[in-house]
Image (cartoon, rainbow, N blue to C red; front, side):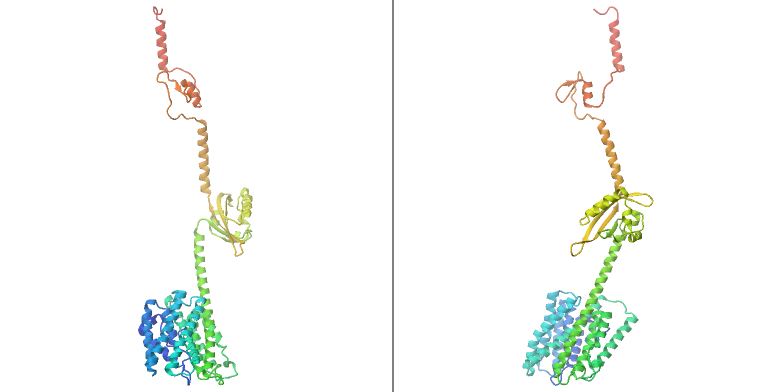
Length: 514
């Protein structure tokens, strides 16, 4: 729904441009002057302050000085054209510029540079700061009116001044901030149906507002009550969010205050002074604005939370659907399988759908020799992180080894409400470990059968005896028999045989001997 008055007709982001702000400020001031009471000539609605506050909130601090100078110049120009004395013009300019600056400065100091209407807390805190600063600024503003223009009652002037500025902050500032968020988001083209609905909302809000607030005062029929406008504002909040709600409320407020100031509508009781009638109308509009703006912002928070949840779920699904491990979530008693990732089909060789329908089939796939051990260990340690390794038997009889790690998830009362876990196929690792263990065992048996001599072995160079660790010299046969698993059989080598035969022949020759 487009904004309803000259103030909000421009895109809020462009209000940071001095020329645009100057024109918008003058137009808003003329609009506020049109809501002066008769014969007091008090402005009961002053939108320029809400305009400047909105411009400051949606702009960077480095632009504030230029915006403030332009607003001060525009305020001086408007009051001078109304024939107000120069000194009073300066007083009005100082008050009307200082008040939005103080509100924006306190807001930025309190809430930072975030968008002021992002949460319900933002709405309430913005209004609280605006109401407080308007009340403070109304004191010097009332002094300017009383001492500069000769108004008799300081209290009545202060109340009127305060409420007029509050209405500007409550009605105009949210419009600028809400539409600035839309401009920053850069939405795509609006559909025809959406545009038709926005036009229907605008027409309905205008028609119902005129029916209620333009009716003769004191009418006994339904239009004599302001309540029929609530469904229209709810329509704006539910369908168009913060921008639509703020613009619709502003349209209703303009119609209500204009007609109430002229003695028409449910608040125009002839027996009550005009200023009091306008105060009641303003209070009604404040409640209407705050209540529905909180509703719109709450719906926006909910939509953002749902979008973040959907995004988180999508990331979660992408991770769990692509990893090779089985990610699972079950209730502590294993009575329900909350989630089972697609890797289960590949490792267990069974479809996941059957497990959701029959949670007991999750245990049926475990090897019968391991099932009791795994189930007993799970029940004993369900409240703490634990892990298991066991075998899984596929429907075709294939056996796979898996490793499962489980972690308890507790609720706010400390009770275990879910058990989450990750299971991976470790068959290859188990086969490698088994092959490694077998190889180690073979080496161990081989080493047990062999004794090896190592290091320097002392041996006599002449007789070939060997010295043992105790320092005794032993024959070669004795030493080796002691330090190895071997034994000796005696024979004679060809060289020794030839030598022995030669010696024997020499001894057998005649004439030799003794």
